[in-house]
View (spheres, helix red, strand yellow):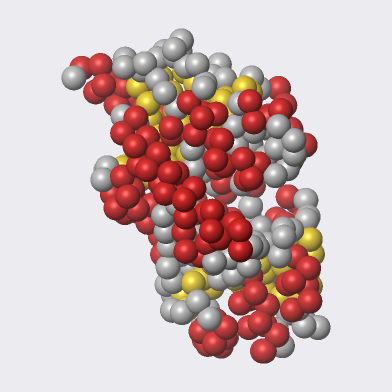
Length: 366
């Protein structure tokens, strides 16, 4: 079958981009359609691929500030001419699932989440510190349109896959559709436990407000615990100013350096609420326990008392209490590692391939 892959944008390397790479391995001849493509900020493996960006690609500053063109993105994805394809696979947390296909084309959507800023995180987005008075007045009108379009385009999808039980519940809530859960791919073979653990806690994250890295910094400040924060983002300067003498802001590091830190940290701190969250799985693939906020995807990737522990409230005090409990707990690195291997990329590709085969047969038999 002639196949196309659709993704929201290709402007950074994260979980969604790894899903696209895994899809591309299953369908090497498939072109990739996306609203914006920035070759400077994604893995070089994309450079040799057939990537077809939308008209937004040519607009001023689109490669770096693609978010400001959100109002144009529904039109952009609807402009993709997919008439030649028998199978369309979208990797979507925003607009990718809204493409228009032929009636006899199978459309399977791997949904990372229904649009966060239109649904679950709408009020956080509306009242964010970077939203000025004018934007705050315009956003409700824009989001009303976006929300209606997003709900409507869920009906263009023949079959949904959710990246977690957490997201499957949101799909049922907002789209009234069922979704099969296939956890996203993690390259667990890249990581491995080591015998030499050092005295520091670790955060690996994009530095944006909803990741709540500030909680990890504040808790380690209070307990005077060594913490290393790897990552960059708009919150970097604010978090650096917040960091006490025991906190190191490492900025962007290579994958090899991140691997080294994962394997040697005392524990990995995960204070945000994520749809799934790949970094806690990478830490566990390195044999290290995770101290996570007990909501969202972490509840599906961390096993209390076996591969980590949870703190109940998204607050400094709750995380401080968890760090104190951690001092009296023991974890087996090989047990943690074995659990992480259940999320390996090989398993993802096997399950995705089987799902697509079953649903394509079902589509044409109905």
